[in-house]
Amino acid sequence: MKSIFHVFASYKMLIVLILGFASGLPLALTASVLQAWMKTENIDIGTIGLFSLVGLPYSLKFIWSPIMDRYVPPLLGRRRGWILLTQIGLIITIIALGYSDPKLTPQYIAFFAVCVAFFSASQDIAIDAYRIEVLDENELGAGASVNVMGYRIAMIVSGSLALILSDHIPMSSVYLLMAACMFLGVIASLFGPEPKDQVAAPKTLAEAVYKPFTEFFSRAGAVEMLIFILIYKLDVAFAMALTTPFMMDLGFTKSDIGYVLKGAGIFATIGGTLLGGALLSKWGIKKSLWIFGIIQAVSGFTFFLLAKIGHNYPMMITAVCVENICSGLATAAFTAFMMNLCDKRFTATQFALLTSFMAITRTLVQTPSGFIMKSLGWEMYFIVSILISIPGLLLLTRYNKWESHHQEKAKT
Image (tube, rainbow, N blue to C red; front, side):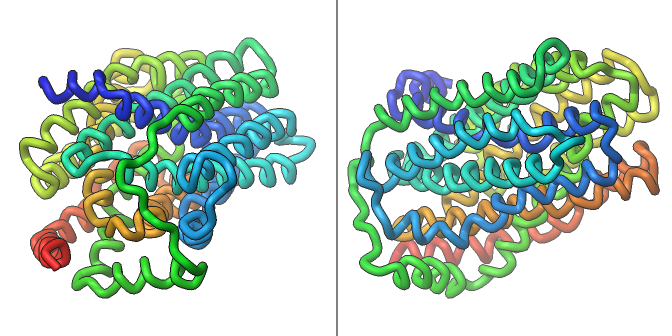
């Protein structure tokens, strides 16, 4: 526990925490909050599910990440400069999204939601690279935990606060307030420390494009690792894809969802994330991935029980808290796993590649989720979410092969 208190005393970790917050803030604005807005406007559930496609930039960000490795903005250097530029883009497009109308101008909603996702994904590229480069090797595990904590707090703020406020003020005002919250990230970008060891930018764009990929795919088990990243959190992505419409179907108000689904889960989220970081340092990545992966799968059963019981506040709170704890545990280990895979020479592009594959799961599994629910009903929907965790856990049996190759590369 001493190391956890030391984390909070570190200026670097404070910056990582705030940037994690800035990274997580936009996601709910194009997901759960947008879903609630469209549900309120009586948009068809199938259409709501299709709008998950606006998240594709999170899955494709590795395509333009070499540009952010190669070119250095005129202010604040390569990493912090790109962070600042993407944050400015986010502030503008979040406001524009809020002043659109899902019923009258759905094309504008789709366009600006994609823009928000694009700038958010680009910000993630720069923040992830900055975090890995600014932290010492022995700080990566703690850094992953602190980053996840900031990310989850942001999702609670942009989800809970936005949903609660939407019952009292127009959505345009809600999105305007969320855009204002992005200025916290701007401050962190301006005053964050520079990495001790400055890494030179690639000399050419071609070098920035091909070298990160050739290095990664030269490893034995590279394809297996990408498939594992793709499916490890498949169960959570599927179970949580339609959480807001699910709660509303059970009779909970948007304020109920805001207070409980996001707000009341804050302590569970922070506790789960910090516990995950502490256990990660004790157990190591492999054991943590196994235990947390099983726990996160089983957590879906609480939503099955809620679907069976119906409108019940104690069960709702239980399901939300269990999900937040388990998700925090698994995400901390999963993030540390991906950070550990990166070659320090190609941090931005390789981590963007890995997180893009992780985001593919969320985007693709959410797209047909509305139609699947209509066919199966809520109870069977959550049973399926538990069963689809099995392939990821089976693939984890190959971990020793991935780790041995990683250790060999580190020695050379």
